[in-house]
Figure (tube, rainbow, N blue to C red):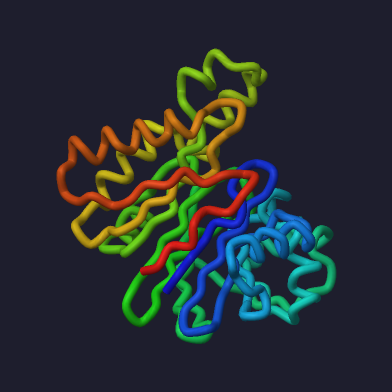
Length: 256
């Protein structure tokens, strides 16, 4: 299995995952031209895509799904609530409903969905398993639930939201109401909360951790990485590589 975050942030998200020549995408908040350019620069082929899995209906996760799905004749998986909320954004697509606890097979990949805590309509996160590796993608979380924590144990790699530094958020330019929303149980994970989650799922077999959805207003990649490194140093149960994903360019392509 290999994977790459083609974009991660409030202006667009897209995670590419491939196994044995077949690939899926989790979310697409980029235009088709942007996505094609990012994939080309990473050495990835969108023609290998079989399906797109949507986490929730917010524009930075879905606004590019419709054109992509129609261009490459892809199935689109999302919860019924997400699909209802995003229907005006997607246009006509080949839609398949997926509920929390269900697993979909796409080529050699098994994609399992689980409910999450975010201010959206029936949001999901996904754990993807191949013959010899597994990847969990957890972004836009207000809180890490017991269900998510259990599903992220014993993974080969994980993408975890490190959205904001609490001090930067509190002292930053956001309106008070928006600050409270970001900090709430249906908002986003702070560096501190994400670091705790990282230590809870840490084990010797965890090879790669990507820090995602880093706020351009309320965080810095350096602060997110520092928090993750400090958590790893204290836990002493593994030493995965760390990478801070960018809004503007793809991550390296990680081989599992």
